[in-house]
Amino acid sequence: MRLTKQTNYAVRMLMYCAANDGQLSRIPEIAKAYGVSELFLFKILQPLHKAGLVETVRGRNGGVRLGRAADQITLFDVVKVTEDNFAMAECFEDRVAECPLVNSCGLNSALRKALNAFFAVLAEYTIDDLVKARPQINFLLGLEDMPAPARLANVSAA
Image 1 (cartoon, rainbow, N blue to C red):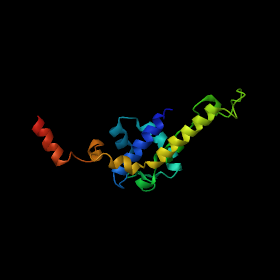
Image 2: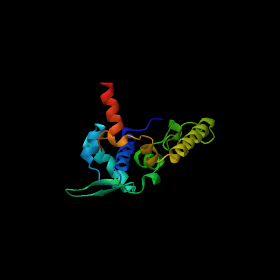
Image 3: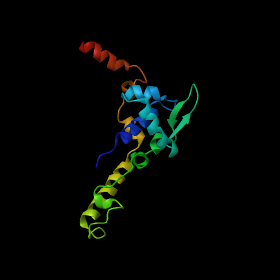
């Protein structure tokens, strides 16, 4: 199974908003931080907003921020609103009923169990977990200058 770019950047957008600590984040800034088009991020913003994962503020000083606390948004929350299809094999799709084993297949059962395990693991991780796992995330995203100890280490290495 492979997640789409939409899911990947949705998670990144939420991480940016979480790292920005409640401040409004602007799409152009997020796009620049990740090197992706603004149009693509605006497209991703729609399902996130509809699901309540982000709030948007219109206007000149507008932007986007998390719709609830970062520790209350799981990766599963993001995946279920950004992925269209979880069919791991063609027999998972409703329109395919050619196989006589479709309702009693061991493969179908095993894949369904694996998919549920995948979802369970995603539900264990929050956006907050991802942000806290990277102490220098604000620097890496261009939200703040390089921390002083890191700056000194870079000067010494030169």
